[in-house]
Length: 357
View 1 (cartoon, rainbow, N blue to C red):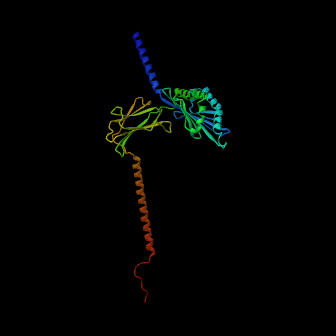
View 2 (tube, rainbow, N blue to C red):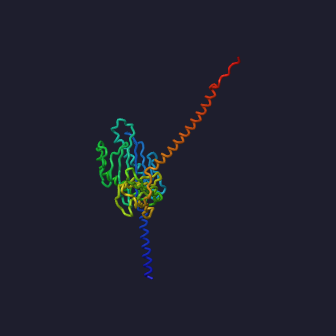
């Protein structure tokens, strides 16, 4: 009996370990949070301060100084972070309107036209992978030009406009440095952790994968593997030959790009030398919704390099032929009508009748 209890306990514990591992694998993903604050004003006053927050390219919340209210775009987000947390962010933005006003007035003080509108922007982004912060940046932009930026991992402001380097001592001030670090941790990283830890921003979607190849004019074979419509954005595409990894040619990637429906797109191409027959190649795709790596072989028959060019040429040729045929028919009808009119207008060529003697 004791042996059976231990066996059941061991089975239950092993099942629990597997479940926790599977849960961690499901939840573990790469996430990005980006906030953009825009202040518009003159040397005399602040006209408007607006803010918008995106998480994994999905709008999370927005703020406008006109109403001094935060608009939550994802209904359950307020439950994830708590009403008090949202109120704290709102009060913080209201309090910092004065700082944005001071910044615009300070930078615009030498402008000869004191009524001219200026725009100051602060962009902040952070990324986590498996709940660990991996990246964090801040960008400062004035009238559409980036003046300063900082990589939080390096911790040093980079000046992009030599004429404004004189302001760097303000950014390096210990007070603003500690405040920046505190805000990035609380309102960028921690906020993201609260949201993604509560629920998925949207349902996970597996990628739609297509693999093709064609031969270019130089005789090289181009392999193309495209994954689109997937969410979340963490994905891996790699080329294998006969099940093995290696370097066989020049590989390029489009990078992970957003689609209009908040899903993502990625294309990876591999250019092979002319002597490579492209046989045995596969595109291996890894995504959280695929559970296991999916293998997509390269089709044997190559696709045309630019099939739309051929299709367009055929359509244009047909339109041209129809146009020529229509013009020819119209010309024939017009010619036939003109000939009939001319025959009716000219006198008969028969011999004239002589008058009686």
